[in-house]
Length: 416
Ligand code: USQ
Image (cartoon, rainbow, N blue to C red):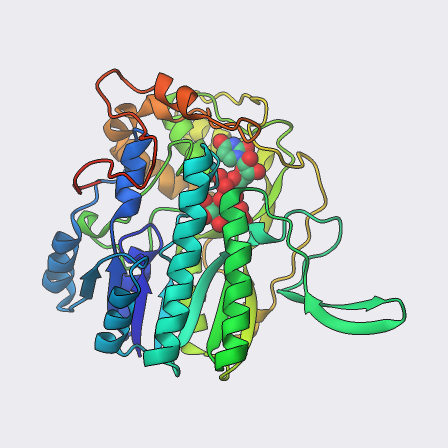
């Protein structure tokens, strides 16, 4: 199959490209490198050194003898999106090119607006371009488990049966997102569902849980590593806890730490995206996959990271800062996740093994972590309309300040 990955330079996009190439698919990608710029904007960088995209293509050519087609550009420009689809004629489009950080979207009004404008515009442009140039293609859209929030009932995969005042229907399950970022995914889901209905597009909405990990089997050489974020805005929970333990900073389960989420290893997330690509729905069908392996509380993850840190001779501490987010700190959480299993999905990675693997890698890149230790602990507050002063205060004097408007370039593109 020919697969177009939007956001191919990102944490998931790059290992997905390698995984699909390894399975004999043809891969092309789009990226505008905005994640590299936005991570720099908050004073951070990837713990793993990431080559430029041109270098990544060259390494794939050298090591695997394969080509990755690449289009540098912005999904905010409709002509560009339509042009890429005309040139590439993909069988499937995996859409990962969205602002993916909840804390980044909560910094202030500009970051909230940039998140929602970028995410909704890019998705709508893709949908219109598909309708014009690739109506047979299958859109695999990265959604998030966070769209559902944490209701006090089980969470189905997208839809549920309801009986109300004596009548029954099959309806989208209610959405209760917890950040401007998560709400952008809710709006996206509605747009994809509607477009598939009016234009008979094939669409899979992947409600992904929190991803952890640094490696996939295809990453056989340091030059193939994906990015790994650990700062407060771009790092996800377990990845951050391990970085904190390596740095000797307190591990930070927020508040009571009883927040439960669905988690999935990077490698298994790649497996499930490939299964979605290889098993498209019918035209006009919009289907939803909840994509995670198991639910853990944040306290469980913090304790696991601390236990393994002790095993390898580190001296971790766990502190519970007040939760900077507005979220339930103890709650029921029982999402279903059968659809991918029905397509043959099997969990291959266990949490403790992957945690050990991340520790091994981060110890190798400890100096890169040390150089950015000042951006790890939380400052962005959900209740505050403007967290920029707090973000700025901790940056070293000569580091660039977060701009007033994040659409303003944070500097020329350079390696992450
Ligand atoms: N958390 C802590 N301490 C930390 C960092 C996070 O307690 O130092 C807590 C958060 O308060 C939250 C939970 O861990 O309750 C998850 O936070 P996260 O930063 O790991 O993940 P989140 O903001 O939800 O977003 C991440 C990805 C996003 C994806 C989402 C899946 O950044 O792209 O959509 O995971 S989900 O969480 O299922 O919505």
